[in-house]
Image (cartoon, rainbow, N blue to C red):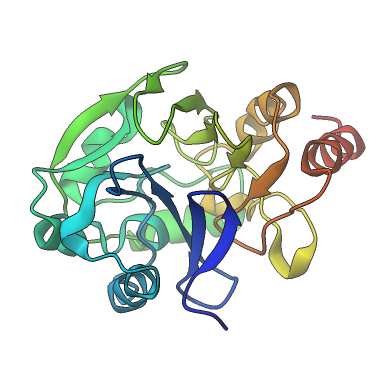
Length: 236
């Protein structure tokens, strides 16, 4: 497994646990780095190694964005924030309190596992300061333009992102692509699995050429058609 995988010009993914968990990397015009999601608590070494493979260092990171506040996305956020000299991460307003507390959002109480996991209070991570709060439709002036799309359900503040110059979509956990097959995230890990499936229709309406997933390999060709086909089959 390569330390870092090219996706599009200036866009990479770092497999932090093979293809099962990925971090997205964007390179800005000035050479600075934007990280989207930071894997588990043990992922920081792989992220640093991935950056080194393209001649980058944590000091080059100008921004860390979290698609949501789960431990496999925010696990290394606190450490990488410190190593990068940042004051905090960016995250949707509705997940900000979970990032600063290090507590996972509620799990879906409509599922047996969600009720069990909720009582066990699993899914925590090292608290991380929040430097920026996002809302639906925000477009960040970084890496040529990064649009943020609120796709709640997996967590209240879950977001997906589109890199405007390259047409790369990052689904976060709205859709998984485990073993190269798209599927919904595990229902028990969602705050509302039903809402996740409803809000994911947004991903079929956007314009993109490549789809990158936190969980699973990216789709390089005809990604929009593949995602729209999945949503159509699932009735989303």
